[in-house]
Image (cartoon, rainbow, N blue to C red; front, side, top):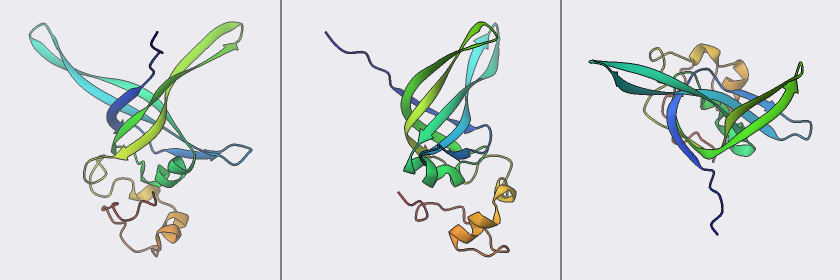
Length: 148
């Protein structure tokens, strides 16, 4: 008898900058959300609709890529679906999120709001980590900068 399969491959754009947190044991957790657009025909007109997904990326990859996950950036995600269940105020609640095994940066530039989008959110720590002074431009070519 075959085993069950839980695999997701999805491409979308970040709806906000990623958040990097650490567990008490020191494990990195990078969380972000993506929007996936599609068009469908309703009567004689084509309408665009978006689906939104929460994503969690654990460990070293999440730690390394979090600074590049900026609102509007297109990403490809390979992972699985996980459902969390809890009780709140006597009512059963649940939510499904994608737990990513791999996240790929796609497309050229940042994608959201022009060439300078996302640069304002970089902190001085990011500039120090990248070896830049506060006045230097942040490079849009990430090929050699990604540490994995």
